[in-house]
Length: 310
Length: 310
Image 1 (cartoon, rainbow over the protein chains, first blue to last red):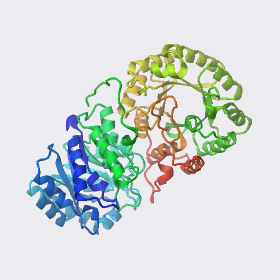
Image 2: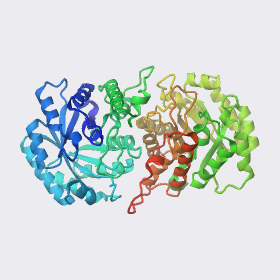
Image 3: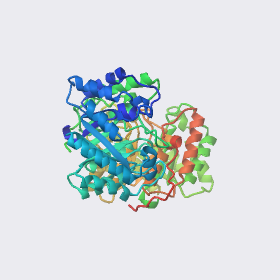
Image 4: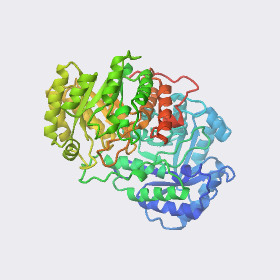
């Protein structure tokens, strides 16, 4: 986690969950291995959701069991998304190291996604977080639709902060804001994270941007400048949320790493491995994927460029 | 030019100059009209280059004569790119209101583009600028390959500042940095423009980004935050420089306007007119163009979002 930036790969979860073509467990493992080798820090293997709802995630437990049973080539933390108590139970049983869980700040999105109001969903997430903490697991709590909602449009910042406040009161310091609908703008990113930092200067900030309107990299840059440390991204820019009306892919891992490396950050990550994987995935799905760098190639400097410490 | 942001549309010049399919003068006029109506501030109609070098630009003088002969529907400034004395002469004769001219900070790029060293090319641009000023014309001077070069890679900041210093000594205050090869990163954008502002706090800063590696919007945001006022962009994200090895399109006008408007800026511009035009251009060229918003549609808020004054 050199230079203070943490890369959290979510392509095997958020990236694959909207793909109709079901990917075999063996194929997911074959993709997870170069991701681990590339030098990323956290790898999300899947979500614990009912297999009928998202068949692509039916083998999540198997994937965790696989990576628990072997010696990983690098000390990557494996994370899983849990939506309810049943998911938490499954995750605790199969070897999840970091639990990600969240609440939508939009009433409509919350009800469509969970059948609960925002307030009820927050109560449940807090109960689940306590249980995961008791089991000595890492936890990341998030606010979904934090920058706007595909159904409701503008989501008042105060609705987001209400949830953040409850997380902080509970001692949950690793907080992610998720731009589920891809609506964030960089100025809004600065305002939101800036506000959270005034609420608790020790908060560990994470972000999750979608590139629906082309702003994901701009938002990541603004987030980094505002002190966000952990960045969720999908290799090849795969992804999107089936529960929002217009769903763009996640910010693309190799495009983001390329930006960091041009800025002198995270030069320990193998961009080559990520690009090779994005090319493989593009062949597998038989179409061009949203990422840029796997198509253009990265910038190779004829001469050295100056390193910069942030 | 509400909110201090100036939109300078260069799609009919930088956008078209690398398109093989020659666009008729009547078609260019048919595209220029909705651009003028959309609310942009400056419209670049073409460049004054030898017709054999770029046949697409052969009718530049005719276009300027057309818009000189009619009453424009809005007070848009028409700009033209001039590369040499002959071009300046043509531009003065046909009604250019704002002359854009520049020097590459990369020796290799300068020699390939002009056959001259950077120093010789700067001398020539300064002579041309004096002549245009004497003719009471608006002038924008630029540094090309300011953020790196497709041939040389890293371009030391000092090479850029040498040219900027000569512009400022000459009293040329409207200075554009052009990311010809699409290599800029937002941190670099902040450093470069920040340095120029320390050299002359009254400088009027302009920028010209290409989206080769997906960073054009991030760079525009960083530029805006550092005090840049004028943004060159191409409708539909058309464009690229035929003299660099990998050429991505210009930052896309409607994507950039969409970002500004989401931030509460430049709500006077008709995003709808820009999107309609991008759709027309996509049909004309028979392919998907690089812009995002003309394909996804803009965000329509169900409710009002708060306006913000910068």
